[in-house]
Amino acid sequence: MKLRAVLQYTSILAPAALTLGLLSSPAQAADMKSYDSSKQSFWQHPPPDWFLGDETADMKGLAPPSGPATPTPLAELQDNLKKVKLPAGFKIEVYASGLPEARQMAWGDNGTLFVGSYNATNVYAVTDVDGKRSVKTILKGLNMPTGLAVRDGALYVIAIDKLLRYDNVEANLDHMPAPTVAYDDMPPYVAHGWKYIVTDKTGSMYLPFGPPFNVGIPPTSVSQVRRVDPKTGLAEIMALGVRNSVGGDIDPRSGDYWFTENARDWMSDDIPSDKLNHITKIGQHFGYPYCHQGDMPDPKFARGHTCDEFTPPVVKLGAHVAPLGMKFYTGSQFPAEYQNNIFIAEHGSWNRHKYQGARIDRVVVDADGKNAHQEVFAQGWLTGDQDYAGRPTDILQAKDGSLLVADDWAGAIYRISYAK
Amino acid sequence: MRKIWALNTAALLTVGFCLMSAPALAADIAAGQARAEACQACHGAQGISENPEIPSLAGQQDKFLQWQLVFFRSGRRANEIMGPMAADLTDEDVRNLGAYFASLPAGPPPASEVDPALLQAGEVLAEQHRCAACHTDTFGGKQAAPAIAHQHRDYLVKALADYRSGARPSTGVAAMTEAASGLSDSDIAALAQFLAAYR
Image (cartoon, rainbow over the protein chains, first blue to last red):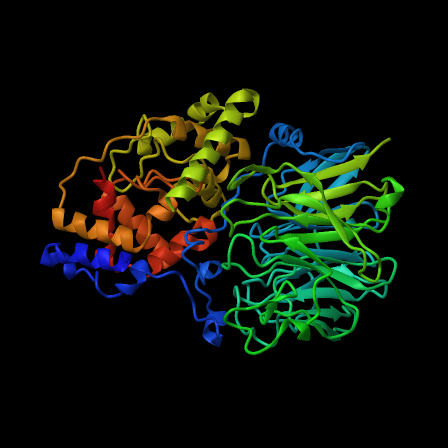
């Protein structure tokens, strides 16, 4: 309909206008955005707005919001936190500010807090000397260094297709050593190529590999979770059929790997649901792109598969809540019923008319995945139908049993603590 | 789409109200004005530029202004004048400057000759490329998407060409890099004419 309107309009214009290339691509005017992501050329040179493919009429025009240009000032952060609701006995405060686009956090052995970032290309170190906390940018110019970990005194940072190791890091915060590449058998796709690192007790690292588009048959090197030994560079494929996962943790009860997963976009405001998954067997397939949320065949890419062929999620977290970093709680500060509960940082929506998420979710679940129950633990960062005061990206437990929360919208770290 | 814009407007009003109810937290417009003295020579005493190659800043979207200063400061938007100008700005300066220029009344369409055929072609192109989806129906902008009506034609031509070539970064998941990637030089001339003269 709209196309016809444009053409009619064109026909009444002066002929001069017609020579301006107006008719070179008339169909683009009214069509939804859609990309043929099935070809290698798409993965290697994705269009700059690759997020926006596969529009529907109902979802037309939705796009990721741009965050603040500068990290939110302390006074404003403190004011924002007054609006955050927590269960009785819990409180939230600003732990550190001035960390643009803060993502995964990890502790150094001597108490330095390391924080990755998204487009900001930085890695930060938060140090605490005699109660005085300061933030330092220790690395710059990395390719989406969202994920990091500390092991044997070395900082590991993952930047798309390189796992970098910085030895003896805490002694070198002011003059970081040149990194050693610990593992690089990874594809260079930036789209959904940013990662998260979970180290198990042997020192091996779980790394997620997202597909370089919204939905399609992915390159064989991605849509999976690998377990990589950074000492030898040996890698195993632990899970397949995984879309964009940027968070996970080892269950202290079983040693199993659990992970969050962001479901495909552009179906509707309310489907499909994002997921919390549990790997119980090496090589399980979690459904993408054939089946979403464990029970919803993809309208285009199911290709004859049925959902019972795949491992369903333990918990459907909701549509467009965007679960990122997560942790099992093992501290002693929170009440006993929180022991081994999962806390999930929900980044919140962009592909939804009324945003949801931007909160901390609490999941109570048995080690075998049974009796799962979820509830909102902390919320209040949504400031309108399509705006945020903050967007949680990761959770980390502190030595004293309090929880730290990273926020890439406000560029801040918060601390949630409990007192009777 | 109308509905979405209505929702966004409501969201903006809510934010505005919160800022008004807590003035201590708002950016400091007076401090922004003081810091903006250095800007006047090129961008005009009231943020309305006389030079067709330099954008007016009066009434521009706060968030857009802040992002541009951050891009100039980091060098991601390379410009031999604005790079050094922005190099020493603190985050606080950036917020204050954004608030100051956003608070100034926007100017009328710049006085220049209008080519009616070019203007009409630009109107069709603006529809085709869905400029209003981010820049709103009146092209006054929203959040990080700038006001694009009533800028100088020459400046709009440069801006679109810079997005097309990748010389200038785009917020909103590279929305402008993509939007400009398929424009011909004559498309750009037409869009610039339409937006400069928009009423």
